[in-house]
Amino acid sequence: MSDTTPFAPTYMSVGVLTAALQELTPRERRDPDPDLAIEEWLAFAAELGADNIELSAALHPSVADVPAEAMLDPVANTLDLRQPFTSARAERVLAQVAATGVEIADIAYFDDLLHEDPAIRAKKHAFMLDVMDTAVLLGVPAVCGFVGRDQSKSMAENLVEFEESFVPLLRAAKDRGLQYRVEQCPMPGWTPGDNFHNNIAYTPATWIALHRICERHGVEDQFRIHYDPSHSVLMGQDTRSMFQYLKDEGYGFLVSGMHVKGQVVDAKGVSGWGYGGQTVERGDWVNGEVSPNPADLAHSWNKQTVLCEHELPGTARHDPLAYLQNRTVDWLDHQLAARELLDADFAAMPLIVEHEYPAARIQDKELLKPILQGSIAFTRHIDQAAADMYSLQQEVLASQGIPVQGVGRQAYRS
Image (cartoon, rainbow, N blue to C red; front, side, top):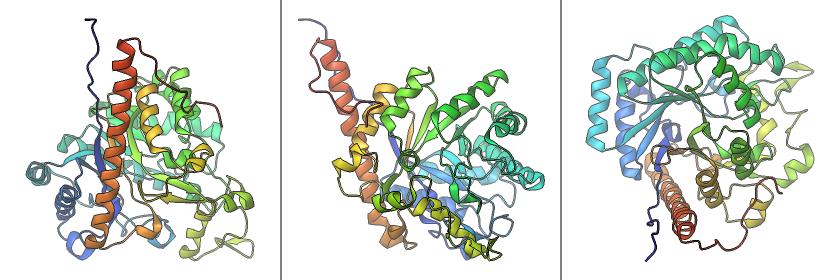
């Protein structure tokens, strides 16, 4: 009997970003006892059936530079760093990790780290360094966040800003033995101006340009991508082609984490505004001037929300035509493409459910619990199905010289 490769699928761990429920621990309870929020989220994640959490950090509303009413999403500072995160605090959190069996995959701080105001930029950098120090104390391998954009400069000038201002953050990550995983959301609503791409690390070609800068400075192992397919759909891209592009360019190793969040594109919105989104009469400008009312600035997000709505995995209809048009995420092909095209350790890569489906963003634990349980279960089964298909087709059948049937979705074709 000839040798054959055994059927041995590799499944990814499945977690949840704690911003999914900002008020799991009401602020009047968590502000005076900041680590209570982490303890309660670890316990909640166990109830949800999650393997891990992505711990959300943010500047506390009392010290943030952006008013809460101007934000698309409520402030989610599950990790409260108004006071230093000490070894005693770490011991308390790690005791709950041990008690629940739920790990901390990474710590996420999503902010504009190339902000054009030097004082605001310095404040955000200092906070990110505190996040990194917390990651070390908790034994977490990575932090996750954005790069950002200096609004006063061109994209080309922002490459220089990245080299001068962001590379030092990567050196700090290297000194601490951490990765910095960049999520690629373009963050169009960060500004009432018309710039759509306000996080310069928004697409594979830019990731590569930034990584080449990192290579020159010896921090190439720190710069990685926390891929989120919702943003790809927003920009008219499809996951398989993006992963193929990374492989073709020799950068298939860049993705080391994933957000599981979809995007459901409204064809009527695209017809009216295109993929650049709403450019005039959004509500953030009044009589030709930027509105002085912070609540009006939330309308800057109409550049995005006029044409799409975030999907919590499992809540959108199964729509093969939308998959073919890149107007929602084909989750099965997403997970297959990752295994077929990326150079990654999938057993170690977290698959993090990020809940931003507006109609289901319920700030009530008992109402939200079955919704998140269903989404996490859906995500786990989709990943397992993809892993099973990959092992069967690319390992078992291949080892016996048996061809895979059919064609399947192809990169660079739409």
